[in-house]
Length: 482
Ligand code: NAD
Image (cartoon, rainbow, N blue to C red; front, side, top):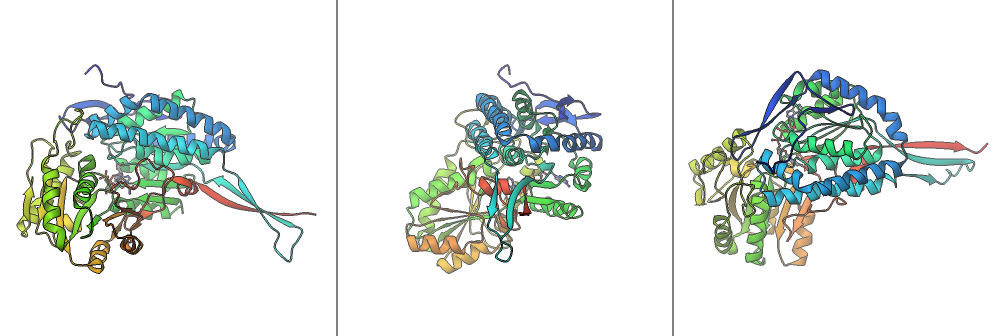
């Protein structure tokens, strides 16, 4: 246990570490052990954080971009130096296999790196005079929207934080974070590194809470919070969207998905099976862009199913701290119960278990392949968020597209083909914010690329210039030369 990182357990408010009236336990899903008791913030802490963010906003906004960039760069350097403790913390608090946690630590830091560069480049534009008014000059200024409130999920405890906080900080917006109740330790570590980087008081604040509602109410109803950014489930996203409407905040929502992976008859089956397995079982099936439905052209379905089943059966389930573990525990009892219920529902309706289909003790569930699946089963209609892959068939391109788009969600969609025309036709027809063509991981290490969903999968984009725009107001200054 001595190689465990030591974690701050208090909230980071107004540049200070503060206890709250209560604490709540953070548990290791692989063992059930309590890792730490952390501050359970409520309305009081939210009010303090709000005042601090509002107070510091003018000075952070007017801090030269180059200086904001310097502090962020220092934060990035510290994150890079502390990548291993960050990775271990993620694995301990939410069960991600350690190799993947190391990848996430790098991915998370890459947003800070990228937006540290953006901070020094936020400028403006000078437009030509309108024809009838040659004496006018039109200036376009980009200004920070104001204090921002971010709510993040447990499945990427570091990357979901930096994908939001880094563009906010670069733009000049103070950022208040409420991390998921399952994974606050990573967020607190990031706050500690921000403090060490010399981040000014109140610019980045982290408030863990067991019950997100009292704290969120304060921040979402207050008109001085000008931006709400949320990553999580579609149901909660909808609720928060409605709440934020009262004060007309800018809103970004990164929500759930029901990703199809279309495998066409011309695909390299061995490669496609490998990529689908990776896309499906990464983070034990608990990423928003994980393949949720495997749809295979009828001609190659038997061959694909066999190759994919062999790969699935060979996945190593176990202690996520071990280097060779590929499948860890589900994050909590609720997540585990959802996966189990989805498989039971499918089997009761006629699906066949090709691989797995059973609990493995504690919160572990065997990687599973189901065949003979059809619409009306939860495994196809809902986001399973676990290591379960339903394999269904399609006849032709038109049916593949119709099946793929036949869901309210629109986050990630994938296809595997060697036909260039088909690659274009299908990727253009898919109603998804991210499309992987012969690529199960379109967002990997790409902080400069847009990430986000259509339809029920969200509003807005993170990453690249699109992610920065979410934190910038556009102001026109019309100057008459008199
Ligand atoms: P969740 O919606 O239950 O929780 C997410 C966050 O919202 C947590 O911090 C939680 O405390 C908070 N929350 C819950 N109810 C709230 C309320 N009433 N008011 C304020 N805050 C509230 O989601 P989850 O199960 O923890 O996360 C998994 C979901 O997140 C999946 O649907 C997944 O697809 C989605 N996700 C999406 C993306 C993306 O970029 N689109 C990325 C990761 C996860």
